[in-house]
Image (tube, rainbow, N blue to C red):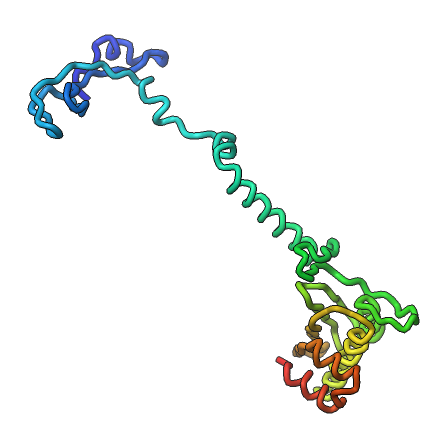
Length: 231
């Protein structure tokens, strides 16, 4: 800066003195320079005027917008962001088993844990009763809705691959019974942890389960399709 006001220099040690300085402004286009040095580099004008610039002149230009102002000026993006965070939080809580979120978007999606309950013998097998059957025979079971399907995990004490396979097929048959009784899960993903080490997974498709329950698919073919999805 040049031509700093003498009064400002004299009071520079105090906090309440506003800094100010002078500059030269083109009388034609308004371009400013620290010295009177015509012609104007923008328009070529030879006439300049001396102006005094105060620190407060820049307050409005350099002041950052507050959070509240930003919210007021951008209501739609803010509302969309809040809604997205809220949905993500609710889905995360439901997936963790805090509660079941039933079809929040009207598309048949559900999220949340399915407790194991005993079969009440009313000839209608529910997801909770399917989980109860597995829990009655195996340890560390859990079942949850995730989207349109069910995910089931359990720990097996089986001591051979054949025994684990038999267990998985039996669970798949129970799922077919659930589908025949009106259960609407589009698939059943089963994960089994073998106590001695190892893990197996199968995904049972609703269409295959329905065909098996209706007698349109043999047990051997159903078993083959279930095991073909193993990983």
